[in-house]
Image (tube, rainbow, N blue to C red; front, side, top):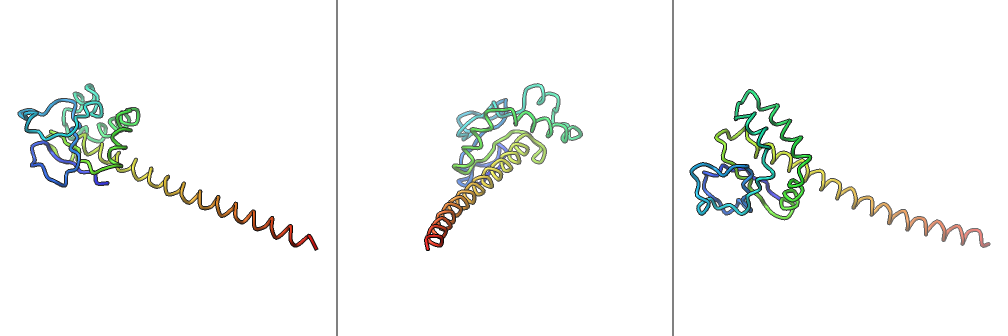
Length: 152
Protein backbone atom coordinates (compact mmCIF):
# COMPACT_ATOMS: atom_id res chain seq x y z
CA UNK A 1 0.00 0.00 0.00
CA UNK A 2 1.04 3.56 -0.63
CA UNK A 3 2.03 5.87 2.24
CA UNK A 4 1.94 9.52 1.29
CA UNK A 5 2.71 12.73 3.17
CA UNK A 6 0.95 15.99 2.54
CA UNK A 7 0.59 19.36 4.18
CA UNK A 8 -2.99 20.06 5.23
CA UNK A 9 -3.03 23.29 3.24
CA UNK A 10 -2.38 21.44 -0.04
CA UNK A 11 -5.25 20.40 -2.31
CA UNK A 12 -6.91 17.07 -1.72
CA UNK A 13 -6.28 14.51 -4.42
CA UNK A 14 -8.21 11.34 -5.29
CA UNK A 15 -4.96 9.36 -4.94
CA UNK A 16 -4.54 10.40 -1.30
CA UNK A 17 -6.45 7.38 -0.03
CA UNK A 18 -7.36 7.76 3.64
CA UNK A 19 -6.25 11.18 4.86
CA UNK A 20 -4.99 10.95 8.44
CA UNK A 21 -4.07 14.04 10.42
CA UNK A 22 -1.06 13.11 12.57
CA UNK A 23 -0.62 16.36 14.55
CA UNK A 24 -1.55 16.74 18.19
CA UNK A 25 -3.01 20.21 17.63
CA UNK A 26 -5.57 21.22 15.03
CA UNK A 27 -3.88 23.24 12.23
CA UNK A 28 -4.18 27.02 12.46
CA UNK A 29 -6.65 28.70 10.16
CA UNK A 30 -8.17 25.42 8.97
CA UNK A 31 -11.88 24.79 9.46
CA UNK A 32 -12.75 21.24 10.33
CA UNK A 33 -15.45 21.31 7.68
CA UNK A 34 -12.96 22.11 4.91
CA UNK A 35 -10.03 20.00 6.11
CA UNK A 36 -11.17 16.84 4.30
CA UNK A 37 -9.66 14.55 6.94
CA UNK A 38 -10.84 10.94 7.36
CA UNK A 39 -9.22 10.41 10.75
CA UNK A 40 -7.43 12.56 13.30
CA UNK A 41 -4.88 10.47 15.19
CA UNK A 42 -3.69 12.86 17.91
CA UNK A 43 -2.23 9.96 19.88
CA UNK A 44 0.30 9.11 17.17
CA UNK A 45 1.77 12.63 17.26
CA UNK A 46 4.90 13.45 19.28
CA UNK A 47 4.31 14.02 22.98
CA UNK A 48 3.57 17.54 24.12
CA UNK A 49 6.97 17.83 25.78
CA UNK A 50 8.86 16.59 22.70
CA UNK A 51 6.87 18.88 20.40
CA UNK A 52 7.58 21.92 22.58
CA UNK A 53 11.26 21.01 22.97
CA UNK A 54 11.75 20.62 19.20
CA UNK A 55 9.90 23.83 18.24
CA UNK A 56 10.80 23.11 14.59
CA UNK A 57 14.45 24.01 15.18
CA UNK A 58 16.43 22.37 12.32
CA UNK A 59 19.46 22.03 14.62
CA UNK A 60 17.42 19.66 16.83
CA UNK A 61 16.08 17.53 13.98
CA UNK A 62 18.26 14.42 14.40
CA UNK A 63 17.58 14.27 18.13
CA UNK A 64 13.86 14.89 17.58
CA UNK A 65 13.75 12.10 15.02
CA UNK A 66 15.45 9.65 17.39
CA UNK A 67 13.23 10.57 20.33
CA UNK A 68 10.04 10.45 18.30
CA UNK A 69 10.96 7.01 16.95
CA UNK A 70 11.45 5.86 20.52
CA UNK A 71 8.02 7.24 21.45
CA UNK A 72 6.43 5.49 18.48
CA UNK A 73 7.86 2.12 19.47
CA UNK A 74 5.92 2.36 22.74
CA UNK A 75 2.77 3.83 21.21
CA UNK A 76 -0.19 1.43 20.74
CA UNK A 77 -1.69 3.79 18.13
CA UNK A 78 1.14 2.74 15.79
CA UNK A 79 -0.31 -0.77 15.54
CA UNK A 80 -3.70 0.48 14.34
CA UNK A 81 -2.01 2.79 11.82
CA UNK A 82 0.13 -0.06 10.48
CA UNK A 83 -3.01 -2.20 10.07
CA UNK A 84 -4.77 0.62 8.25
CA UNK A 85 -1.76 1.18 5.96
CA UNK A 86 -1.66 -2.55 5.15
CA UNK A 87 -5.31 -2.45 4.02
CA UNK A 88 -5.38 0.75 1.99
CA UNK A 89 -3.43 3.77 0.74
CA UNK A 90 -2.96 6.44 3.39
CA UNK A 91 -1.72 10.01 3.36
CA UNK A 92 -0.30 11.39 6.57
CA UNK A 93 -1.45 14.98 6.95
CA UNK A 94 0.56 17.55 8.89
CA UNK A 95 0.60 21.34 9.31
CA UNK A 96 4.30 22.17 9.79
CA UNK A 97 5.93 24.53 7.29
CA UNK A 98 9.08 22.45 6.93
CA UNK A 99 8.25 19.73 4.44
CA UNK A 100 11.43 17.70 5.09
CA UNK A 101 11.63 17.87 8.89
CA UNK A 102 8.33 17.11 10.60
CA UNK A 103 6.67 14.31 12.51
CA UNK A 104 4.85 12.95 9.42
CA UNK A 105 8.20 12.30 7.70
CA UNK A 106 9.44 10.27 10.68
CA UNK A 107 6.12 8.45 11.02
CA UNK A 108 5.99 7.55 7.31
CA UNK A 109 9.51 6.11 7.48
CA UNK A 110 8.64 4.07 10.57
CA UNK A 111 5.46 2.78 8.88
CA UNK A 112 7.35 1.77 5.74
CA UNK A 113 9.94 -0.15 7.77
CA UNK A 114 7.27 -1.90 9.87
CA UNK A 115 5.29 -2.90 6.78
CA UNK A 116 8.42 -4.12 4.99
CA UNK A 117 9.33 -6.27 8.01
CA UNK A 118 5.78 -7.65 8.30
CA UNK A 119 5.72 -8.58 4.63
CA UNK A 120 9.16 -10.18 4.89
CA UNK A 121 8.01 -12.20 7.91
CA UNK A 122 4.84 -13.19 6.07
CA UNK A 123 6.93 -14.28 3.10
CA UNK A 124 9.28 -16.20 5.39
CA UNK A 125 6.33 -17.94 7.05
CA UNK A 126 5.08 -18.99 3.62
CA UNK A 127 8.49 -20.47 2.80
CA UNK A 128 8.61 -22.22 6.19
CA UNK A 129 5.19 -23.75 5.60
CA UNK A 130 6.34 -25.00 2.17
CA UNK A 131 9.51 -26.45 3.71
CA UNK A 132 7.50 -28.24 6.42
CA UNK A 133 5.15 -29.73 3.82
CA UNK A 134 8.11 -30.86 1.73
CA UNK A 135 9.77 -32.33 4.83
CA UNK A 136 6.57 -34.24 5.73
CA UNK A 137 6.18 -35.59 2.21
CA UNK A 138 9.86 -36.63 2.10
CA UNK A 139 9.54 -38.29 5.51
CA UNK A 140 6.58 -40.27 4.22
CA UNK A 141 8.46 -41.18 1.06
CA UNK A 142 11.52 -42.36 3.05
CA UNK A 143 9.30 -44.40 5.36
CA UNK A 144 7.67 -45.99 2.30
CA UNK A 145 11.09 -46.82 0.78
CA UNK A 146 12.40 -48.19 4.06
CA UNK A 147 9.36 -50.39 4.52
CA UNK A 148 9.45 -51.69 0.95
CA UNK A 149 13.23 -52.18 0.77
CA UNK A 150 13.56 -54.15 3.97
CA UNK A 151 10.49 -56.29 3.39
CA UNK A 152 12.35 -58.57 0.96
